[in-house]
Length: 256
Image (tube, rainbow, N blue to C red; front, side, top):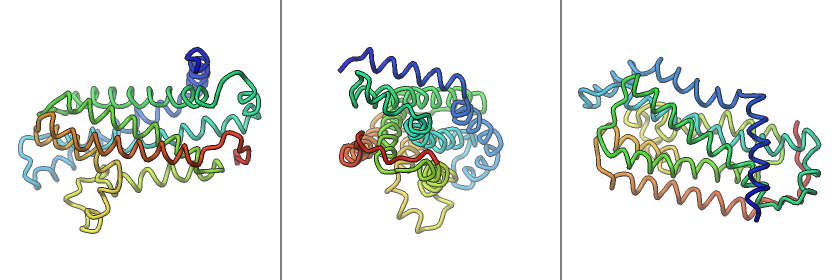
């Protein structure tokens, strides 16, 4: 496998992103704006739950970061379907790049975008009142496993869906629905009991469990191990789905 060929594909993806920065703006600006709008209301809810002396940003910042980072798998899907829409997929496949090099070249920039998103949202969040009471290393560990989970979910997305409409529906509806079920839109304690039973089946739940333990409860590094481990297990599952279903020889994909 040639790193040079993967880097060349990555550079092309970066050029496309520079020409159309809407994904970058969406995952960076929107979560910050939503955090600013919701932090006071979330703060009141946290007070009722017994979290005294905390800011609404302590929940809202990681919550919005988790919610919006899960739009990235759809962006990964777009990058593949875009090749079909531009009629460049066959040309890319006919190049010297292997299937693995194409996957790495296309997924890597979106994973980097995920790292940037988490870094920027958390950094701006400090100015909005975010205060990490627990292990910052633990926060980084949960964040890293979250990015891995998101990247592999992107691979599963292109393996399972055959049309651009399916990817778009999953990206818009699925991400918001799973964020709600996982306790990333509102604190899980204020949601119905049936949501509590479903929540652990979503990666958003485990990301929020890790961040809440470290940021709100002030727990040490060991509190990050289980959430990070489960997120990594989700990543492994998504990778298996991609290996099972993804066939580069399958040209039956529609940009429509």
